[in-house]
Image (cartoon, rainbow, N blue to C red; front, side, top):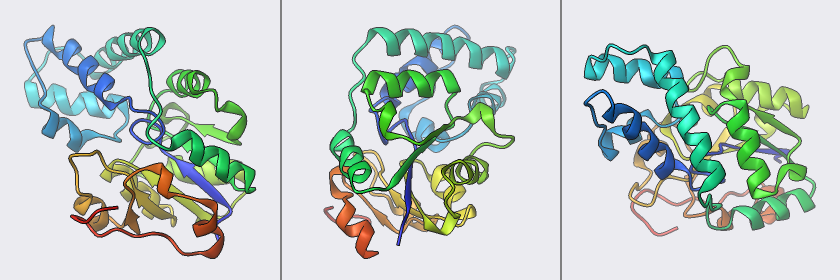
Length: 229
């Protein structure tokens, strides 16, 4: 029986990965570099500064990872505040249903605290979450388990009683390292095979498939990679 559900944010609760991808390339363009979408997907879920450290090495950039992180953060916050930021399909309904059924809900995101709070406020779902944990509040980001362990601690729930929903393979690895069950919510172009290999219990087509009945019964809908959810 699960007592809590912990959600990643970008790509799980809100369809923000296209915005982050575009912001990344806007920053890189100033240094004569560009990251293609398949390559970007491999970095999803990483802490921001670690992500840019990888890009500095990859593109032999002279800028520091910390400065590139600040540049993207400023650009991302500006766009988040001025452009539409839609929830993922079924997200709002899922959150309302699980909260109404008595499950504790949390967010564990590699994004900064200001980004997490902004997204939750824009979606109007702040009252549904018992805790929000951001990447700048823990020592090690995903794929280390720190974010999820901190979320469980704040929720007052044992790790084994927590279900995690993640869109990134790094996030699946982190949640499994924390001793939690994970459902993957990969991007539309991704069949979730890598998520299953990393330890995900199953693959969701959308958050509309995650309901209180399946959590209360202990049965989770599972979809094998390559099949319809």
